[in-house]
Structures are given as C-alpha cells and as structure tokens.
Amino acid sequence: MKRYLVFLAIGPFLGGFLILLASTVDAGYWSSTHPHDVTKLLVLFVKSLPYNYLFGFLPVMAFAAIDDIISHIHGVGPSIRMVVIGVIAFFASAWLYGYQAGDPTTSEFILYGFGGLIPAVLSSWIAHRLMDPQPGASPQGRAA
Image 1 (spheres, rainbow, N blue to C red):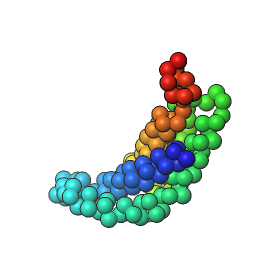
Image 2 (tube, one colour):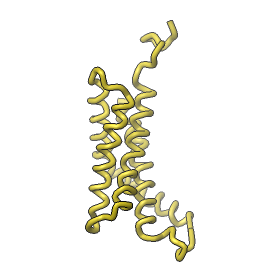
Image 3 (cartoon, one colour):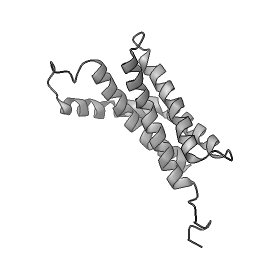
Image 4 (cartoon, one colour):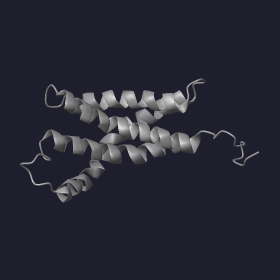
C-alpha cells in the first residue's frame, strides 16, 4: 500500500509540473522575446494541481501496479525495475502529450517524455527505499 501512496503523492505533483514546464518551453514562454515571469508559472501550476491529481490518478496507479508486479519477479533488481518503469512512463507520457496537437518535434517528444520518466523513476526509487528489505538488516528491522 505504501508503494501506491508514494506514486500517488509524487507522480501527479512532479509530473504535472514537468508537463507544464515542457508546455511553456514548447510555446516559447522562455524565449528572449517573453519576459520571464516565474510567478505566473507557479500560479498556473497551483491552479492546475487539482486537475493533475484528478486526471493523473489512474495512470499513476497503473505505474505503481506495474512497479509492484515487477518487484515480485525474482532476479529483477530495483535498478532494472526503475529502468523498465521509466521507459514505459517516458513513452506513455510522450505519446499522450506529444501527439495532442499533431506530430511533435524530437525536442517536444523528449520534453514530454521526461514529464513521465522522472516522476516514475523517482517514485520507484523511493518505494524501493521504503518497501524493500535493506541488505544486512534482519526482518525485524534491526541489524543482526
């Protein structure tokens, strides 16, 4: 259950911010012709945060379930699990957001992909640190 809560807490928050950042870069917000107003970006992020959780709930739970399933496969370590989750999240996010307005450029595809990759890998890593037994620790959590 902790794994799902970690993914739910981190995924929509960080993923929504990264997708918003990718959208602003894509729209030319950070170019030299526009004044750099970080306050507007943060206000927009705070206003869109409920929608990030509303629409990000099911995809994040799906990635948490995939991470949970892979964690029960013997011989697959946490680093391989993070790579698999990251690759799946990268392509899912890039496909979902990149193709909304037509064919994306390579930079758009990569930027939107990182909006899924970074939260998925970070959530998987934190879930690993919280859930998986650490080497050298006894089952009760005390060193032998």
